[in-house]
Amino acid sequence: MELIDIGANLGHDSFDNDLDAVLERARTAGIVQMMVTGASREGSEKALSLAKAYPGFLYATAGVHPHHAIEVTAEGEQQLRILQGNPEVLAVGECGLDYYRDYCPRPAQQRAFERQLQLAADLGKPVFLHQRDAHADFMAMMREFDGRIVKAVVHCFTGTRQELFDCLDAGFYIGITGWLCDERRGLHLREIVSNIPGNRLMIETDAPYLLPRTVVPKPSHRRNEPMYLKHILQELARDRGQSPEQTAAESTGTAREFFGLADTR
Ligand SMILES: [Zn+2]
Image (tube, rainbow, N blue to C red; front, side, top):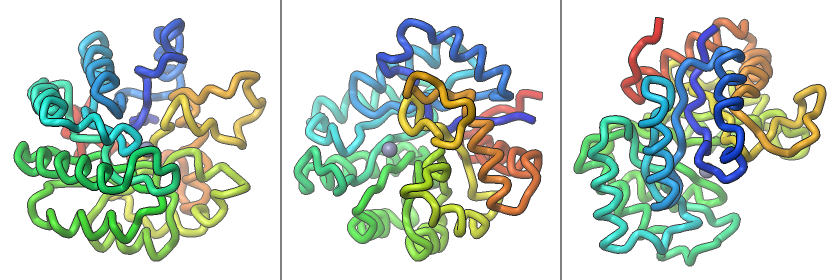
């Protein structure tokens, strides 16, 4: 079984001391390629350096998360544009809107999002999207770019059935994380994931965040890591009424098509 983690924050400090061991465990769990998420200017530089250090295994996105929206100054935009010139950088993002935490004022979030959508449109690159508690504004902004954004994935989808259908109708791809395994807030996802066509479905850990709550034995630390993608896959496959092999083949094929990754076999 070949798996692709489309969202791993491997540049996070918590991986500084044992990244090689983390990657080895990921390979053992069947992960053949990974997208390292860039979520800030500094984080995107780090994601690129990791992709350069592990060619053919790690690839990067470059973007600014809504939590860091104030970083998208003229200079920040220029930096993102330069980062996108590297062959290891396969998507614009993580970018979007987060009205749940509201760490940055909403107008700043909207501006940073709009600038990054424009960048993706200019470069013809896919976008890696974050949306939380901002569905209506998010869909409205995406509609402004209708026909100009080649492909978009709503990473860590956690929304309702209606929001899922809105995203699918708009042509977006869907990223599913271990949120699914959270009995406190992910149960609704279990009932709707079978509606995602295999050619729109991708899987991700969002490591080091979102350790799946159903992993046994529970690791003593709270850090999520890419090897748990296999656990997410198994739970997702069950909810979709598929074999893990089938869900793996579909999500891996979709990730390769979306990011333009080479077949590793
Ligand atoms: Zn996110």
